[in-house]
Length: 438
Image (cartoon, rainbow, N blue to C red):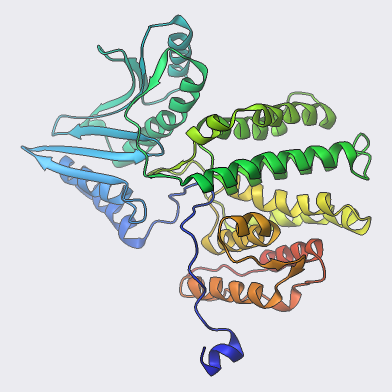
């Protein structure tokens, strides 16, 4: 290490394991991709439909995901793109555009799953579930090109792709008459990573149950504390283990149940949430492993949010942790900042600096899990590594300073005396960031 590196900590970070976290978002496209969409609109308005569609799929292409492939053949455009475990294929010519994705193959036709798909069709705006002559469940969208503007295509193909990706694992989990078909798997996870994620899921659910049942706080009187614990657990498992299929649906069900206006009080909702987590505890290890794989994606399912609304979320929830921290309920105190960052990452496509800062806080709070995945931890023997954390913050600033020239986090605000104090001070620092973008 050179002199400046020793003095100022400017050495490059060590290589990180190639492990993904959180949900895919398509809200931070490059200027080149945005220009491609504008070109698609111009060509479509000039009735240059195939040229418009080439530009449109160029807009959808993500370099990191390698998610879209297009070719022209005899005056017709053929395309395919990927959304999770599903491959969507189609064609377009001067007359029409059609796209489809295979969901599953039916070994026998049963009224149970056919009725489920018929009901699902009533919820769809652009696409529809259908049954092929080979008894393959397929979701289809088609349109005349004159009516297929880039805006319509984006909405329709997003609906088709996200429904296809969601329904295959759910239907296969529930109906034995169906078998997997046309699975797109970008990368099979190594067994050690599957084992690590499975053990983490089991361990964290049991730890929260133990805190509720045996912790110092009377959770029968403090239902909100239990809600923080359970929702922090939900969002943490979603972000850190990146589940597909059934587990993802269970976590989404927990989120919906918690915020559903159904007249139930907090204690009743907590009981319902706990039952859903119990289902994950009771689920066989092999079922989890079937859904642990890396995939490509084209459409994000979370809407974008600006930093002002991120700051509001912090401001609304963060003060609720102080009483728990002052009275020695550290796990519950940490569930509050965990809930804040987890809910934001679960529900929204954040500005990139906010996303990176929230990931860093998650990495500090869940140091042992990240250590088990091969990352250098920010906590050693219960002591926060102040130097490493400050360096990580500076690297985030360097990464985004060109797009966000006012990104200057106030490191003096950070408190390293305990994990709750650090998490609270870190979010206060993030709340006050200026993410003006040139």
